Image 1: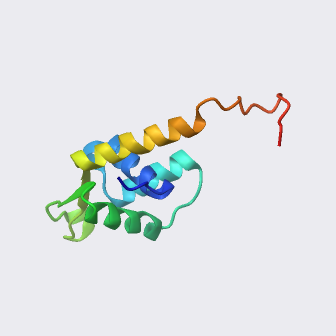
Image 2 (image 1 turned 135 degrees about the vertical axis):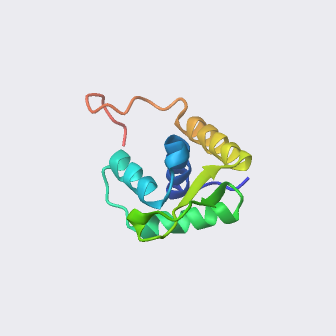
Length: 111
């Protein structure tokens, strides 16, 4: 199993949270709101393309819409492999954080 980058993990999580409304713009907006940091459109589409190539996401074209000048949207959804990849990275993160002391500032840090 590949270890996902943080960007890949966030994109998969955003797609899962957005469900039937997961396309480039909404995925980017969700990640910006969640992280509080600006993400370029390329920072979204590069992981989307890679995750699709790996089979973790499926992309489906919408019908053309008048508000987009007749252009289609590409909606994404997680595949079973995508869910498995998220389960794996969640387990890795939990094991890395396990047994660490609380990070609160009022504790004496041993750094």
